[in-house]
Length: 170
Ligand SMILES: [Zn+2]
Ligand SMILES: [Zn+2]
Image 1: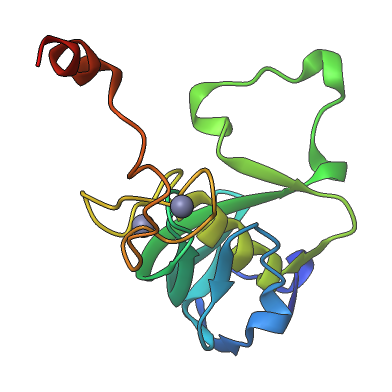
Image 2: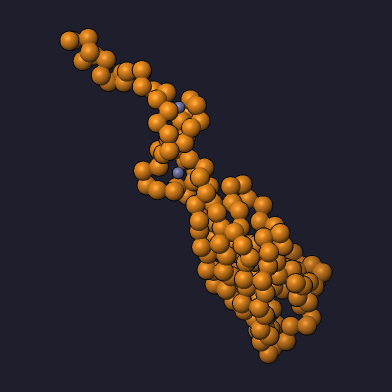
């Protein structure tokens, strides 16, 4: 769904949108969107700036960084994005970035792709390092088995060097 900056007025306009994972195109390694993504919110012009705000609800499967098994994650994201027409902005040397301006995006062609806005919000919420459980044993570095599921015994015959001294004493 494309929002034209010029069509956004002072009176808020409600938007409800369901986007398929294909439309979101979240291209992140180890992350798969599970089912449709829902956006409920509005557009409105406030102080000459276009706001797109509301909430995004999404479910994703994210690979555990240790064992790579998918972990289900639910996202409920509230956001308020501000868009400014790049043509309305002063030229670079006049442009002073103030704290409150940092959160706004410049729009080049007067159009905002809502799928892109939603994708960005999900992207920002993704956990950097997710583990399926505190004591996840991860993959065996030797054979690649998931050690939560299989006791691959790769290290059974190896003696922990900390104990070898004791063994010599016997
Ligand atoms: Zn794991
Ligand atoms: Zn192994």
